[in-house]
Image (cartoon, rainbow, N blue to C red; front, side):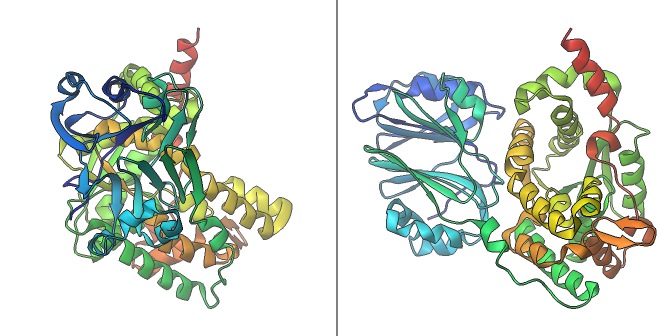
Length: 465
């Protein structure tokens, strides 16, 4: 059997009734769908052991169904009496389906098998008796769960649960699985990647040797991710995205580079320059301040956050992805995670000055552990709103393990002129033959580099008065 469809972006919602309840499950599902960021067309609904296909939410609302368990997404796969909605991609899924192993996860004794899944995913699998919810060990795809007297609801967007008046909503932790059945809810941790990386032996050897291993791991990951796809890269001209672009080019894939910012912003000027140096085409959305102000309420609605930092980070992302939509590009590589893995933030320098490299090592672990809550769940809603699928090469499990084996002294290198942040990535860029201008290029955070920070902050202040 085949799980998943042509598009990997496959958000879903679902509901499991309490044992003694008998309610209209369609009413709950429709309320969930209407408030999400995704444009719902060609819907699959699995309920009471039957699969229904409708073209839009209005057709779904015409159904009247009472039952115990239901699941709704744009693509549902059926195996015997089980249905599964997979958001994202599992690269070794073919082997799992061939051996029917994925469907044995309903058995609690088999849950440890999830550790062997290779991919970026959240999925829900339901039968007439139970539902299984799972999330990858990084947390690249969100998955929320809530319950009340009616039953248990789950969705890839938090706002879907809020729309049905659930109050106690929580995010399923990365590497966790939930089983819901007539007896209630059970949660299991099946893979703690954070604990594992702390047990790995550090690399020894020269920075060049370590950078070579990192590049091979990244190249293998990118090849796996882009196979058979038209690819774009969210590109600001910085080191992280430039390395991705060069590795793709070396693999024989010409990506379309995507950037957004004010016309004279550092990101736009830098992206143009680096794209020229790399010989790659770049598609830039040159923002106007009025556009930023006009779209502000919509961005807040999408990301469910209203503080200046989160809104100003989401703003250039939203407009860059609109360029992807415009050119019918549905899959983009993102440099997310590189700063947390390779010490890219300015504040890391102060940490080393205050407490040495041991303190930096602890901080990197902490920042990596919080990445899914602080950044990935926010950004996912922006991708949904534009119907563009993200892929995170730096957050592949193999790359993460490799990154944590690199000594922190090679990530934040102390030099006579100051600190070299993400130093090991600069060594890697040199090995790729990239120009010194790219290797040494300084980079501002996206909210500043894109030039949107002041406009967003001022507009939010006016909205509050």
